[in-house]
Image: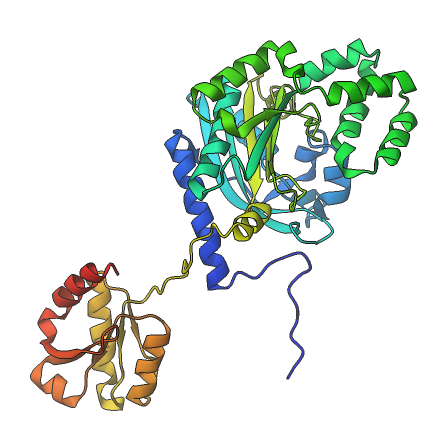
Length: 428
């Protein structure tokens, strides 16, 4: 056997069974997005590095983005996220759009990650954003979208949790602890890494960025305070709103949620698997009120989140929530090839059936009838049609029902009508 050239590291092959799962996930994402009135859009897969350089954080740009020069010498990147592209698109037509703007997308992204379970370099991601409104209730709508998606795929409050926080609340608490504004980014990074490092390593990291022992003790106390959200009027309103929308059981405050990207300005949230088996977040998002002006537009409040397909698929597989047999056969009817002299008639019959809306495959060569019928059975095809010399002379077709083994001779002129009725009765 010859050596097979492997796929690029960190990418995935989607065979029909995997593609069916991806399409199923996409269909749920579409249903949930549209149920809240969001419109689908798409942005380019290639963007200039400049778009991301000042907006997404140094780690994303320098370590995770796939960057290359184009033939004109410009630095181009495969998009690692969508929010900067969204902001650019809105800024370009800011005075022509209708607000509040509700947009969603599901497409491919690339990050130069170290491939492992739950993490790949190429992934598909649901992005959904609400622009033009700066209220806690708007933030709550995005949280409700997450919870509604969880409900649609069968995830309960025992399976997942949505953790929320407010960066403005955190900044107030930082000031109370005597932490300077200049250290805000460093402290946010510190908090974001708390659950990713050993306690002693995290303590040392806090000293390395300039915290005192007293400030570290105060920071830990603050991060462990589950009632701290009551000090934030915005979070109080958000919590009231999610209760009103009937999804409060999925939502909990956690001061450790700060999100690593620089552009978040207010509410932030992440969702997690409660079993602890999957340690990475399922999704994350928050409010970003300054990003539009950073790409040349006018100030416009915005809130959104992104969910990759890798983690959520692993979780749904673990809990056996992905429906079985998603990769259903696409062909409903097989037209067999009896012999070389009747082959053109078989091709014409298959074309007639397709014109009438019946998914039809014609066997591609002359072969034993038993082999052709076995192929149809293995592919889950419902009916096989035999068009031999006798049938051609009589303008008829021998129709075999592969589900129950019965067969009957029908007139060719009636084939489309009869097959349509039979397929409707079988749900195919």
